[in-house]
Every structure is written in C-alpha cells, then in structure tokens.
Image 1 (tube, helix red, strand yellow):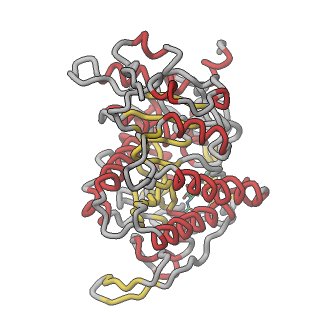
Image 2 (cartoon, helix red, strand yellow):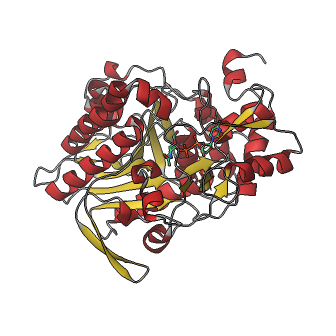
Length: 437
Ligand code: UD1
C-alpha cells in the first residue's frame, strides 16, 4: 500500500488548498480506493473526528484541539453554522503556530449530515488502516467528539420527532458505523438539562453527576450515603430527554462492550467567545438563550430583553445559572478526549459536569454586560418561561479530580469576550456570507 506525505498546513496558503478545504467536495464521489489513502492525510498521524465542528461550542473546541497539535476532521452540514467559521479557525491556528516549532495540524471540513451513512463510510474508508492480525479494524481516527444535534428547547416541544430522529436515532446509527470501523473512543455533548428539577427537589446548591445515573450507584454526599437509581425526573422538554436517552444508550453500549470508552460532558450554560473576536456565537434565526438575546439587544437588533421571572427563590428573584466561558468548555473537551484516548477512566462510560461551580443570576449577567460594554441594555420583567428551573449550578469536582480540568475564566471575561465578538461582528458571521453590511 503506497502512502504519500500529508499536505500539512505549513503556510497560510495551504489553508485554501483543495485537499484541506473540502466542504463542497461530494464525498460520495470517492469509492473506497487505496489510492486515495495517501491523498489527504498522513497515515502516521492520528485524527479526531468532530461532528458539528463549525457550531458555537464545536468551533471553539476544534480550535483548542488544533492548538494542542491534533489533526481534526470536521463533519458539519451547516444547518446551524456558517462555513466562514472554518477560515477563521484556520487563521487562528496559523497565528498560534507562528512562533511554535511544531508541524501545523490539519483541519478539514466535510460538509454532510452526520446521518448520511454513505458519505460517512466513504470518509471513514479514507482513514482506515489495515486490520490487525486478529482482523480487528483500525482507523487513523483515534477519537470522536459528537456535537451535531438539534438544541433549541422550544423547537423541540413543537418538533419532537425531528429531535428524536436527529439526536437519538442519528446517534444510534452513527455508533453502529463507528463500531464497524473499530472507532470506539467517543466524547458526547450532553447537557445539565439531564438533571431536570432534581436541584429544586433536593434543595441542592450545586449538582453532582451521581444525581443522574444510568446504572444503580451509591455515593456519599454531605457525609450521608445516598442511592441513585437509573432514571431521570423532571426533564421538561424533548430536547432534554434526547440528551438523557443518548447517555443511556451510550452507557448500555459500554456495558455490552467495554472496549468502548465514552465520556458524556454535561454542559452548564456556555457563554463568551474566543478573545480574538473571530469566533463567537451567532445562532441562525431568532435566539432563545440569554446571552445571544442580550447581544441582539445591545446591538439594537432586538428592542428589549425580557427577563423571564422575578419570583424565583434566588438572590434577586431571577434565574441563577452556571455560565461557563466557551473556551473553558472547549478545553474540557480536550482534557476529556486525552483521558479517553489513554483509557484513563474509572469506568468505560463516565459522565462529567462542565461548569464553574459558581452561580450568577440573569440580572448579574445583564449588569456585567452593561459594565464591560458601557452601553445600555433595555430590559423588563416578563412571566416565567415554561420549563425554566430556578437554579442550575455544577459541582465540578469530578472533572477537577479525574480530568484535571477546571474553569479559568470569570463571568466578566465571558462578557468582555462576547462584547469584543459583537464589536467585531455586529451582524455575526452573516456579513461575511452576504458580502455586505
Ligand atoms: C437550557 C438548558 C441547557 C441547554 C440550553 C439549550 C436547563 C437547566 N438548561 O438552558 O442545558 O443547553 O437550554 O438551549 O435546562 N432568560 C431570560 N430572557 C431570555 C432568555 C433567557 O430571562 O430572553 C433566562 C432564562 O429564563 C434562564 C436564563 O436566562 O433563567 C438562562 O436561559 P437560557 O440561556 O435559555 O439557558 P437555560 O434555559 O438555562
């Protein structure tokens, strides 16, 4: 089998080379053909497959992986992302390696839906290695981070079948395909939403992973032995249920085949942007989450922020959340992936909270944005939003202990970086697409 050297990204011009920049390339045009193996990559290297890698959290994670020297293969159908993000990631990767004596890792985009099994198999064929003597399939893809999913809570209530189809059925067939290729290291994008209303019912300040499990567990909390039964209580929407179901499926998979290593990362509330101002959050359509709405009000695209509820049992009556800087979240993925690849987990399926452990109220976030921007943010109280919980704050000790990861950035950092992204991109990424302001 002939292998050729990789067209690695040694200069900025390499970023636009056809081999690396493949989003318009219909992958189905490549039948499995050994001649292709050497074209796009270096078989002595390893690669991380990232689905949804152009989205908000995905893009920051791809940047973090590449800065750590990892080659990244992105699969993204651009349904809620902007292709220009790839250029920006590559620009930042190039800048990062200007003074670093390290080969620049490759970042490639393959624009298809992760549920398109034909396209996926064609891609995976290109990264396949000859099987071991035992016949076990091997791949240059040593780990997968799976972001691609629908994530809008209110939309999930209107379109539950779309959510179950994409998030749950899509995951099952994705796992079957990966299994066939011997790719069994998997980081799953989960959510604190799996805790439902447990925080309120148990009157907890912070929530630990043991409060939502998929197998019987006992644990010590505040010097008291507690027993967790598999299940979930009080998840208020189909989106949240898809995340719980996906975790349960992954847990069952690891029990049936412990050669899988799976980490489910339960995100709290991601905010902020890369400090460069090149990457940030720009949801397509009307935003629902707090920070994007605040951003649209601050830039005059929405007239006023509605603060949902002022009678929660919290410090100022508004909801309290664990806002985590997206770059911290991204580095959490890197830590998780490295542990998973090394097989250094206590159990083959392991959940981790990714949060700061600090709660801030909606009004605290608004006031911090006001102070870092020096601009007014008109707001008014509105009725509680259906399904909202009063408090959602992580206990992040498991991730600190086992992944050696913790947040470094504050809410002020998040607000400053968000504002910087807004100043540099008042219309988000759209200006780049339209070519006009
Ligand atoms: C929820 C999920 C989270 C999920 C996210 C995806 C929970 C506990 N969290 O986050 O896991 O990833 O949805 O969409 O289920 N708010 C306003 N005005 C607005 C928007 C929001 O006051 O215009 C308030 C909300 O009432 C809430 C807080 O801001 O108190 C945060 O809301 P949001 O950003 O939507 O996130 P969650 O609902 O916490």
